[in-house]
Image (cartoon, rainbow, N blue to C red; front, side, top):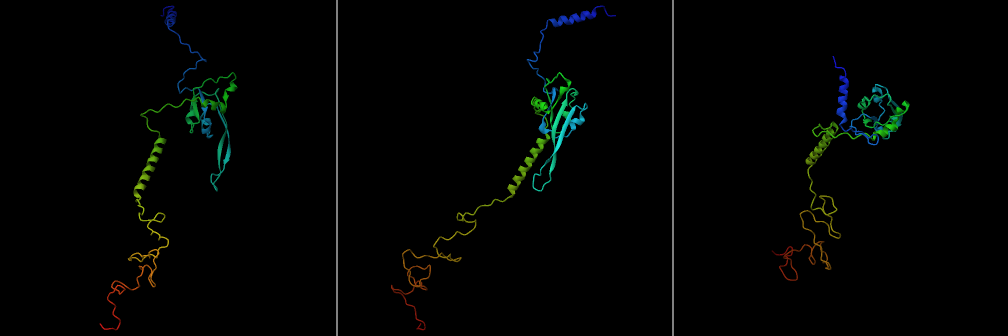
Length: 262
């Protein structure tokens, strides 16, 4: 059987213990509290990511999300293509008088259009004003804190790993193609401006090209008169058909006339 007055004694003991401790008062609203990053204050909407898939409204257990949209026709991207239709968001509202902050709508959103914000100052004097439209939800989006950094020992995200493997595969294919292509050396005897392997063009005023295996034709010296009957390319003063040993002004053995004595 408890002793009469024991409860009062215990209460006074707690009072005596706390009387000697310094109290800490949060000077709200002058000083805002430091909330953890994952605080469930309010839901922010990133409107650009919303595709009006209606998953959040269908999965909400309180049916507190209201979405209206209409369809627009998108012209074909290329001539002869087919026109497509897309959903355009008209209204996105959340009734926070019904919301129980379960976070199901944020978890089921496949395009990351809903986020938790630590903002909590959205009280109203009228319950009907707790239904906030997309403009207000968009303002709360800018109060969403940045996601925490990944653990250094965490596994690499699948999207980054797939992109990195694709880049490495493309680089390996380019290197293999470069190694398989034979290196071609440009012709060194070609005149600048001519195709590789082509013969150089003759200089202006030069004689016809010599036949293969013969030496180049010799032009007459400038200012020298050629003897009558001189073949093109022969030296000056040389009669056609003469060679070493022919008779000339300087003497020599004359040719034997045809039909003469041996």
